[in-house]
Image (cartoon, rainbow, N blue to C red; front, top):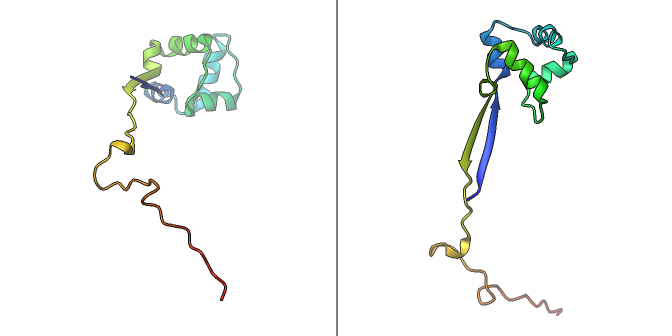
Length: 110
């Protein structure tokens, strides 16, 4: 069975819990750990869901907040829904085979 995997990025929540109200508060803390990011990069890191994060950056964030990677992101996995086909549908579904289709109109000039 197929599974759908998703995650929630919780960096903004961790920052708010530590009293960091602006994204620029994170820049000097990352610089202490030899990670230099521009202000727009830090803004996107905090406010958007990143698709790729380096392990060094992840380690630095864990060190800054004194937590593990499981506090930075929450992973959810659920079974994917299977799509049912109309062939097994009940009596209210009209089958569109050749016998049911209308005949083509023949227009005659008078």
